[in-house]
Length: 393
Image (cartoon, rainbow, N blue to C red):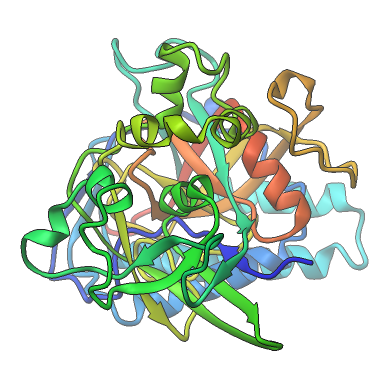
């Protein structure tokens, strides 16, 4: 029986109204002949939900600044207008599909997008990963992860999830915290896991939902990202491969080695000094711009490059086939069957491990398939941004 469910959402900040700020995105505008044919492989009613959530966020955000996209300056309020217009297109498409051949519905949708929106791609330069390649973006995934936990430490459940400490303690490293106990018994514990790798994955994802069953009672709460200790993130998989402990960086390979070699834990985990602190909340974790992410409809990108959140994107790539059988022991993704897919998503999140112009993390949601897909998703493809044409350029 699963005793705890932990919903990971890669969020890196809390809800705060930001002051006016201008943004610049490393994008290039596509010519008409470069614009793709837009199709969507999923139920676009989920897209309606994602857009509605983002519009609610824009009601509390200062949109008086500008967004520079490939030398084209757009008022930030146009991002909101883009969502309003696109929401109506999606609703019309969904109505169309109930009584009209879907090919005709797509023809109408594509004509509207080409007529009303500018389309952009990452502006890769020499030195950027995938420069000169047809597929400009690497897509990975994040998801709902399942682990066990307890509200109090036991012989098995002994690895704390911490809220943010004050003073210099907030800068302790992972080694200081997990192996030297420098935050132990200071009233900062939010719960306890039984596996350091699951705790590490929690830090990868950024936030979660905790459900604890003990003493014949069940309690639950959310974990929302509060802060990091400001140390640089380092993948333990990279170190493990360099040392020859594993031959690939899959979660399955890492977990297998770590479970079999507990004497190596301090050595391995300490190579990543970064540590994440949380708050216990009654609301679900949100993306980096405080908007709830939507399964299959949200992506995370590099916040240093794509800092303004909520823009419409279109993704063409491959994803794991949903066979209904999810073998999480596979160490080699080459054994996983993939299928082409294309989909509209909103850029609503960020993460410390997402680095570069052509880099995105897809939030798959919280189903069994989402858990499976996010673990093995690592495919290149194309990332496109859509912005309503400025009526006053």
